[in-house]
Figure (cartoon, rainbow, N blue to C red):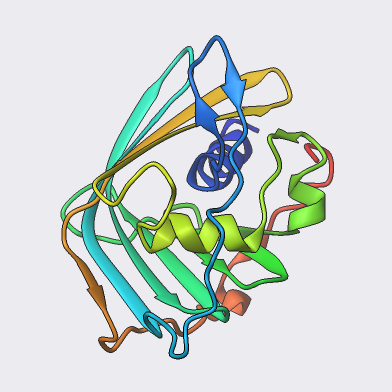
Length: 187
């Protein structure tokens, strides 16, 4: 049961999309996107970002690589030690899959399912902005706070150099090697 809570904690923590402090949760909306003649970028790669997830009881810190193909798919690789991918989040405009490689399992949810207990709500546009350092909070650092039921989660991401229109590897992990966790009891 504790490891199930761990993967849910990682899933929610990586998807934190609202701004504020622990005492006050403030929602943000994505910055309006102007209609350029040509897209600003097609792919975005952010390597060695630093993510710190905090709750009232614990704090987890890890290096994160974020790879995004605009309006299609993104992959977040969490590497807490020695550059080994321990957790991977794959997202499309329709669903999010969190893969706990350490324990050999995964969880799958739509945005509607995640938003049942998540405050403020999450959507693809904001997740894509987070993974391409385009949140209104700025391109160097993002500080985000979310509530999931009774838990308050805070995510701070420090972004290093952002590379656009470079090759990215956003291939899906073969899920048949992992056991699916039923997260409906939490959502």
